[in-house]
Image (cartoon, rainbow, N blue to C red; front, side):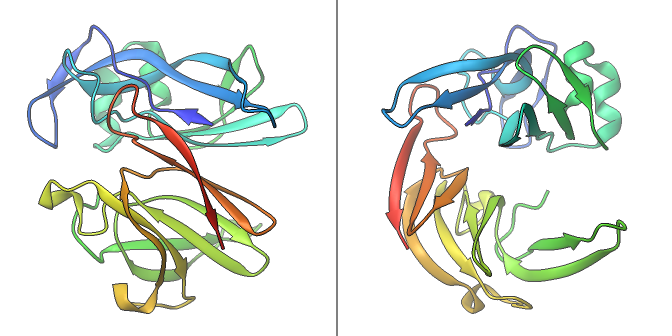
Length: 219
């Protein structure tokens, strides 16, 4: 599970959501076993969060493990040029990194209104096509067979200040919010999703330090 962290001592800058956000290497990846036991296996990843509060964090947002390799998607929410002013760990923001339990290396290189987010498909040759549009503030995706599910951290859009989100079943080539089927709504700041058999495991409380949970949704 990716943890966006709580920012740190700085440098600090104006937050796109209001107030001030500060940088720090507090992002992490946590392993949760079948009994619910938690252990952090990667630490020191970059994070921006509210000054003194650690709220509304931007940092590690998704993770997938294949063999001994772990890939982590790290958010930014700003112009990539802004990384130049950050300490070394900050150069990883807005990138996908490939890691082991002890090291990390780069593996490759905002919308806030309702219905303007899109999902893109990238084939093995790097060709990009639009899979669906009409979504809002999408933070994670997962397939169950041929069905694609998306997490929206805010169903109404972050511009409203509301972080009540949802999990939706995505209609391929959908173009407006009504094209996509709501599986679970009114979730507090949902962020990540993993699917096994007939259940989705979704992280919630992503914007508040200590409020993170993993909930189970039957599909």
